[in-house]
Length: 126
Image (cartoon, rainbow, N blue to C red; front, top):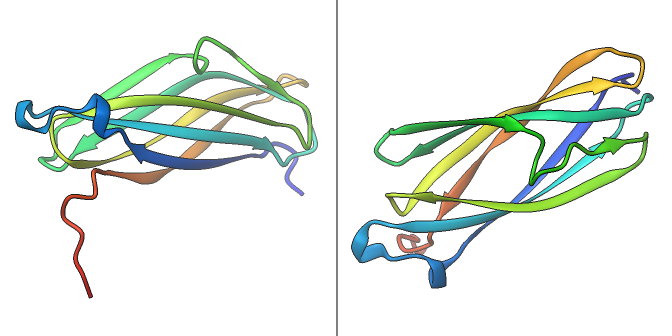
């Protein structure tokens, strides 16, 4: 097992009731579960998101913590939160990283794998 390791799982969701496609506004929520799969307690200090819409327009978001918190995760513990974003197109992607500090002072980054935001309007039937 890695000494410093956080696992990130994401579940995105389109929110039609908060969207206005006629005005080019698409709202998405995502629930993230961060699990400490390492050997050392670690605290999430900051986040860095890269949000790209289907036109290739990129928005970067950086900030302390997540939803106003900087959770400290002991080995085997998880932290789940929900947040959201708006796009000007029906689909896009998000990816990024969390900056963390382990209890022993080690600093490390955790990749947030790319995930797709999609309103489901262009599904292809097979």
